[in-house]
Amino acid sequence: MILILDFGSQYTQLIARRVRELNVYSEVRPCTTDPKTVDLTGVKGIVLSGGPASVTEADAPDFNSEWLSTGLPTLGICYGMQLMAHNFGGTLGRGAAREYGPSTVRVERAEGLFAGWKKGDSLSVWMSHGDHVEKLPEGFVTVASSGGAPVAAMQHTSKPFVALQFHPEVVHTPQGKEIIKAFVYEMAGCKADWTPGNFIEQSVKKISDEVGPTSQALCALSGGVDSTVAAVLVSRALGKRLHCFFVDNGLLRKGEAEQVMKRLKSLDLNVELVDAGARFLGELKGVTEPERKRKIIGRVFIEVFEEKAKALKGITHLVQGTLYPDVIESVSVRGPSATIKTHHNVGGLPDRLNFKLIEPFRELFKDEVRALGRELDMPTEILQRQPFPGPGLAVRVLGEVTPERVKTLQEADSIFLEEVRAEGLYAGLWQSFAVLLPVRSVGVMADGRTYDETVALRAVHSEDGMTADWAFLPEDLLRRVSNRIVNEVKGVNRVVLDISSKPPATIEWE
Ligand code: XMP
Image (cartoon, rainbow, N blue to C red; front, top):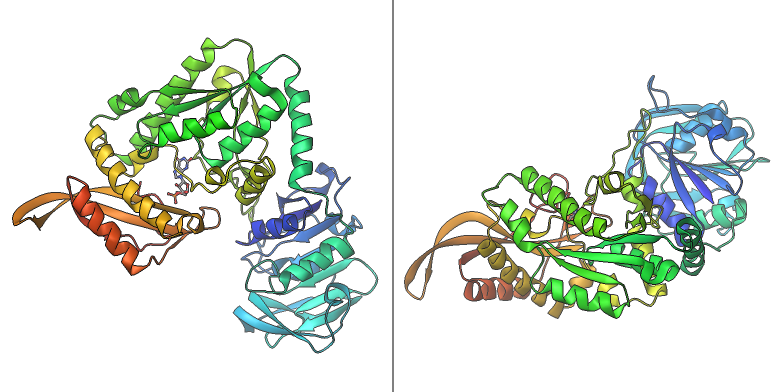
């Protein structure tokens, strides 16, 4: 595998993704990681990531320089390059030569990572640096240069050290993949054997060994991609010894409970529908504050799940579809900061019930889970499903969550989704949904005055939900959706479009 040390760049996870796209396993660790604490068997190369700081600042994120004595091929990117140069006695310059955005580098030596090019070739790259290497450290030569960075790439003449001032991992460096490939396959000598098929085979064996021949496991299915693929994978190991619950909390999209159950049954899963809508809605009565809604839903979910779990005997394990971005310790600039998304709706359960966790996707990205699902022959309509928040429509019905208002939103949302699908846009959007606002406004319908609520439409593009851009939907689609909602959904007389990105807005409204 390739180990990536994270110095806080917003692109660190992308490096891991690019390496994995080459079918080579890759993991991100905080820059403060001590090499002595890591089992280096199997590690074939190291990447020092970029980062927002300047190497020469007093409190710049540092690393244990023993990483450079492991003898492992090492690639420094941006901050990682400057750190490498600094450690080997080069000097850094800053100021005039800053570059942010698209740039061009010229190949000075067609060797190492640039062996696939000719001297004098130009490459479009993405730069984002204040500092640059001014004087090369001893033993290094320049392999590429740019206007703002005379040393845009350097390598050691006899040791396996290479470094790039630009970011090969972003799409704005079109040939970046070739460069990363040269590092991973040629320099580090990795084999492309990290495939979905191998992953499934290894996981099934690991889970069988871990759970043993007679114990049983539980899984809370949401009908979404992660938990469903997790359940299918684990059921390959445990068969009907995996018990799944699908909790209908009364806050699902229109017709969703029936649809999801039908699909889950077709996957031959041992699944039970728990109809708890009335209980959730009862507990939410009179509540308008977003965090309180979330807390109530989390608590009731755990109660419902716990009751069901206790009724079964012999359960030792709980399956969760946790993904890598949920567990990754991001940033780590001033030491590991462990910013973990707390969206996990079954939080607290394993401890209370004394279960051991099975999280087969702890090291995977969402698109990798989709690839596994395809390998497991799961239908595309499950794999392409847009994410849906655990608290469901409660965080999209702003204000009080009453059964009537949930119904109103379900109708509006289903019209929007139907039209988005008809336009062929569903799979290309991270999410598209309607939100019911507690805002009444005056309208006129059939010559009569109306005073009704407002629906907001939200459609976003995103890679992982951490950041998002609002999607530009075709005008005729928006017209159709707006007309249909106002005409077909009782209690709504106005439709507005949300054109906010994340940050500073979030994807959900609550
Ligand atoms: P925000 O609203 O924070 O959402 O921009 C980012 C992504 O996470 C989803 N989301 C949740 N998922 N439980 C979940 O399983 C939750 O409590 C939750 N809240 C938000 C949201 O739909 C978006 O895709």
